[in-house]
Length: 136
Image 1 (cartoon, rainbow, N blue to C red):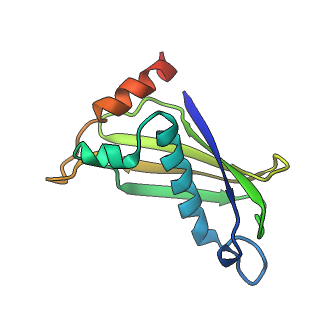
Image 2: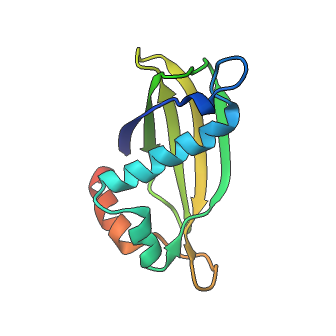
């Protein structure tokens, strides 16, 4: 299992009239978590794309348990519980307040596709090499 954490501060523009983070912004928060999880492995999404593989989001879910508000410091925890199978990779994501309260949970399913043909492919070798130690 691989787990990564990163923080993000809620900006004023991300809140609604109720002074809470607008639900649509959580897709971006989840993306920040995934991008940083990959970066913490030692490469970037750009490196994956430069290797000819893209990772479009196929499905995402979110469950909102507590509100986040302007200027809150959030921790985004991103977890790969299972080895990516075939052409799929599923990230589980949790967002916590600076007091450690669980605010939001969700998951994001992505496919590995060859950028030139948009055909399904397997996980890039660079990702497989970096993830292997976490799943042995």
